[in-house]
Image 1 (tube, rainbow, N blue to C red):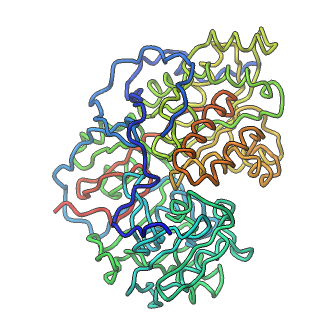
Image 2 (image 1 turned 30 degrees about the vertical axis):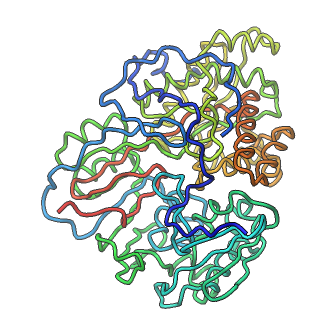
Image 3 (image 1 turned 90 degrees about the vertical axis):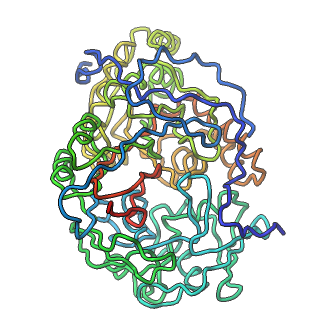
Length: 579
C-alpha cells in the first residue's frame, strides 16, 4: 500500500524539472504586412530526441513590457509585467460584476455535472466543489472536500473526506454524497457531456461516513487529476435526486457562494456563504453577466458597470491602462485554438499536404501582426503545463518553399485549392487570424476559400460531412494531462463516438496504440515518454493545423484586487476590494 498523501500540497506526477528549456517565442509586434492584413483570397522525464525541424526565422523586436520568465515543468512561460491596481474611482461597489462574452448555461442550466464548458465551470464553481483541486500553478493538486488520499492498488484510490461540511440546503457532506455525485454524471439518466472522460470510474465504495474508495475498471494514472472538477463536483444528494430539472434551475453545493437568483438568459446572482468551511469570501455579492459584443464589454468596463471583463481586444490594452479606472491584465491561457483537417478526403489524406499547410500558415507571424504578440506558439495542441508535454519539440517554422516542395512531391506541383471553415466572436481576432493564415498559405500555392459560419451551423456541417478542409476547433484541457487532449480529440474511440463524422476527423491506429498504452501506464517516466512519442507522431502526421495557446486579456476595475489564472477560471472568492 502506498504511503498516505496527507501533506497539504501534492506535486502531480512528481515532475522532472530538468527537461530542456524552450524560450518564449513572441510577445512581439511584428511589422504587419499587407498580406497579413488583407482578407482571405476568395478565388478558386524522459523526453524523446529533439525534432529534426528548422528553428523559426528571426523573431521581431520584443514588445514592451518584456514578460518575466516563470519555470513550470522545465518550460519557460511568460509572466507579464501587468500594471498594479490604481486608485479606485467613485464609491465602493455594492456588488462585483463579472462579464463574459458567451453564455454556456443554455444547455444544462445550473447543473454543474453535465456541461463541458469552461465558462460554465468558472461560474458554477462559485457554488460547487470537487474532492481535490489544482492549485494556481496547474501542477499541484491540493485538498478540497477531501483532506487526504492514497492509492490502495492500481484500481483503487482511497479518500478521507472533510468533516463538518454542509451543503447550502443543510444536507451533510459525507461519503453518501460523494458516491451519489460521482456516479450521477456517468448514468444514463443524467449523462454528462464528457461522460467518456470519466467512464473509467467503475464504482465508489463507502468505507465509513468520511472514507470512500474510488474503483476504476483499468489502471488510471490520471485519476486524481480527473477528479478536480467539471463532472466530478459534488452535489447535495437528496436535493439532486428530485431530478435534472431541479438541478438545472436551483443550486445546492458546498462552495463559497450561494445562489440568489437565475433564470435562462438572465444574470446569475450570488451571495457569500458565511458558513463556508474555508472561511467566508471577502466580496459578499456577485453578479455574473453575459455581454456578447466585445466593444460593449469594453465600454461597460470603462463606465464602471463591469468590474472584471474577459477577452479584451489586444488593441485596447493601452487605452484601458490609461483610463484611470481599470487595467488590462494578461496571462498565458490554457485554451488552445487549432484547426482539424478532414484527413479522409483528398488532398488532405496525404500527410505531405497536411505538413505543407503547417509550414505555410505562418502562425507566429499571425500572432505578431494580428494578435499583437498575444499568443504562445506550441508544436501540437498540448498546453505547456500539461503532464506529458515535450518541450524539446519545436513548432513548424514558416517555410513556404518547403510547403511547395511537399505539395509537388504529393502530386500537386501547381498547388491546391482548399476551404478554411471558421467562426467569429468566440476568441480574440478569430476571424482575422483565419483570414491572415489563409493569405499566408496562398504564398505557398495553397489557395483558400473562406467559409465563415455560425458555430451551430458549422457543427451541423461537420456532422453531415459537408465541410471538407480546415475546421476551426479549440480545447481547454481541464485537468492538465495529455490524456485529456489526445483521447477526446484524436483517438479512434472518440471518432467512433462521433460517428466518424468531421467533428472528430482524426483516427490513426498507430497513434491510438501509443495513447492507449499511456492511459494505463502507472510508471511516471514511461508514461511521459509515451506522450513524447505521441506528440512526435501527431506532429509528423500533421494531424491538425497546430497553432498556439491564447493569451487571455482581462479588463479589471481598480476597485478589484486579483491575479488572473492560467486555466480561464474567474472566481470571486480569489478577489478582494481595493480598500
